[in-house]
Length: 339
Image 1 (cartoon, rainbow, N blue to C red):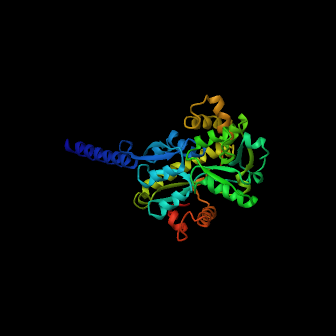
Image 2: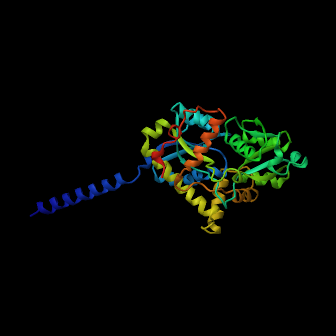
């Protein structure tokens, strides 16, 4: 009679222990989070990663993220290829495509995109050029146009604009965005194209003037992409999908708050404060907030990729002899990750 309760209690405790173990197994083991390095620029266009980090979306996916910040796209692509960083967001460049051709990287999704009706990248000129009569893109004929490197997104945007206007540009590679801004302010460079959160404050300051929109020349332009090493794409599929899920949640929050403006003013204010931790962090919030708010561009929902835009960019690189004619979409993109 005394053994029965003990046996029943033992069975009950065993069941409770098994259930508890099952619950623990089903939850993310935060003590064993997968550590990843994410490359970024201190641009509003990289906000999806910042939001995913600050709001715990990476953590929810079992990812322990450390940001590595860069001054230009090309070094970031090299960082992914060398596996110093695991994931990054950047524009398609000749360097990125060449690394893909060598089997080093793969594009796995889309990020910033030009969209009709949404404020986008601007074509700007220096105050010196503006006062000399360069008040529209067609008047840049024979003038200097800033790029970071040959084959960069700045090169692509300038060339597409010049082709449609029937003009010639002299491209000046200055390596870093900060250097380009300094050259524009001092009048050493005539023109450039850049995201609105940088263009608008420069225009408001009077040292630079907005004279056109990139979307008028490249509609639906897939400005930036999400990419990783080819090795990660092939062998770390669970981690890569987890990264894209978290990134997509961050993009969704950003779009609702500052692009579609459907989340309400309080949510917009919260988003601006979050982004300010990474963008214009050296400025007082009151001065940074208008630039962040007015510079918001669409980030591709669910990290979707505009394939037609990517193909157009590849065709341009080939026409300029910046990449081999043998390179195809599959060379650059791992379509298995696309929604």
